[in-house]
View (cartoon, rainbow, N blue to C red):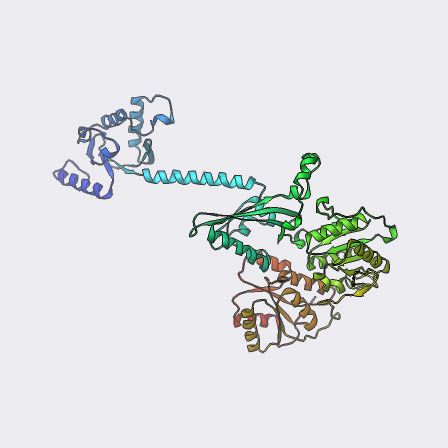
Length: 602
């Protein structure tokens, strides 16, 4: 279109009108003298000027002056500035923009209207300007920016709250957590989001939590429960957990808020509140708080040097009513380790024994005990007595003289009888300390503290002889699921490998000591004792041997946090369910050579 004024001008004009109408564009064209040679009708949708101002030959300055007079011009919106805009200055500025070779901008021409303006100055001197209404797009962008700002503000508010809060979707995956929730678990938000409670806690607790989550999502009824949680740093946290459904039954989300009432339970700092108010807020029945998840990883946060020294302080509100402390002679006092999963029993025992003059500390799991005993043996620290909850009776031989601590005079082990009174317990502890290590792993029958009898152990840790290289089986499988057990057995039999299957981590440790397998396939999520804890227990026992059994973790999904935990527990490799013959054959080829004993020499 080098000569619009030619005889073909009417055809070209009609063609431009048709194109602009089809494309939904408003276009006008000026020549090198800044006079209009074409203007499409849609321009009046943006600038409702008179028809004569869109006629051929109209000066650009006259058109811009009419736009200015209408008050819908770009760059002069009254709400953006109170300064009065000079008409001639505005027109001159707009004309200069038309002489730029390229100019693209989104302009606001009214309170809720934006246009996209694109200008091109051709080599022939013609200026082509196209305009498009982008009001809806800009409104969406503004709403999105406002929503993001609100989301950031809400996230900041939630992160500032002291109470742990999390949000789950319909599949019960975490889709939102605040800082307090991350601190409770000792993880970052990225490590939690997209996962479920089954990835963090034991199956029995995970099943319990999922049941209440499903009930809230399906019925919409709120759910509340007082719980006692162990933080990632090992501190007790007393909460009242509330669960709510936000939204309808089809697309609702589950919001869980844990109201931290630790101050009410354990007591306020001196001077924080009046003594009268503190007494009125004191919890009367601790049994109302159900034990919940234990987020504490002792191998990440446990300070064994501190635990080996005098007992940690236990709030007085946790202690059961007892008589005033009895005086004990210096000879009768000793260093005592309490092992019990019951936080209330632990608190009572620590307060009771500390009041008698003993130095007391407490642990709650088998792998903590194993690590603790290894540490005090390494540091050559003294320990006189280990009090074991009946659930940990199997640890009696581990802590017995010459086994747990490696010393000639190791600690005695005393299995607690639930029927004991405080007086019976005190007398049993006194006699155990006086009798010395020779009377290990004793329990009292018929509430007679003088009658110390050997307690039967469900399983015992018997270390094989150093350097022993014979194996009774090729593979030990630790798997609690019946179907997976059947799959493992079919594959292993097909490969001609001898095997035993353990239903939990505790049984896996016992089978490891009994059968001396060449390879262990360890499911990481099992009841009683999970695979990570079982691997740690085996590695701790192997520390005194000259051999190392390969342990392969079996996981449901190859998440980084699971692999990190597996490596930290001493596992050598991992495979992902569902299990296939190719997987097992690869592991066999890597760790078992020609059926011979292939345990790695340390």
